[in-house]
Image (cartoon, rainbow, N blue to C red):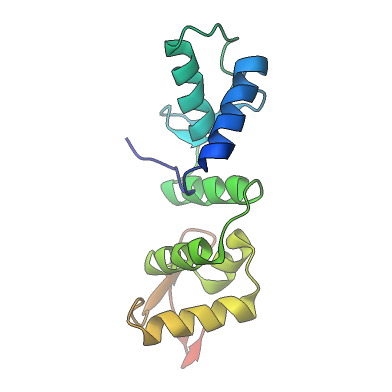
Amino acid sequence: MPTYQVMPPLSTDDYEALKADIAANGVRVSVEFDENNNILDGHNRVAIYKELQSEGVALPPLPRVVKIGMSEEQKTEYALVVNSVRRQLSKEWKKQKAIDLRKAGWTQERIGRILGVPQQTLSRWLIEFTKMGKLPEESSIIGADGKQYPERVNGKKLS
């Protein structure tokens, strides 16, 4: 079963605050699943919901939304986008995620848009990571349409 848990764990304080809120009010924001019942958004809400149920807390049914017809890459991108707007993410986490996404072939523009990092900053990071050996020289990239393209056209770098 693929996981689209793309975010770092909640802090203990944030986890406990969310747990207290769910215990008092139920899950207020729908959990989003794909057509195979994989969680796209709401991993912590589901974990806490199950934990509270096992503790005997009576809760209303879990609100659900099912997203259909997305590719694996679209699901990962969706999970990143919807979670990035809710969390204060550290610079170090964003740097590591930029490395992971670049290794997966994502374009610099796409990574910057999803992580909310200016292109100039991301470009500096990617050059730094390549010099440090954390990133190989890329020969192809994957566009927002999910298709693979050469990284250079007529000798010019595309991203």
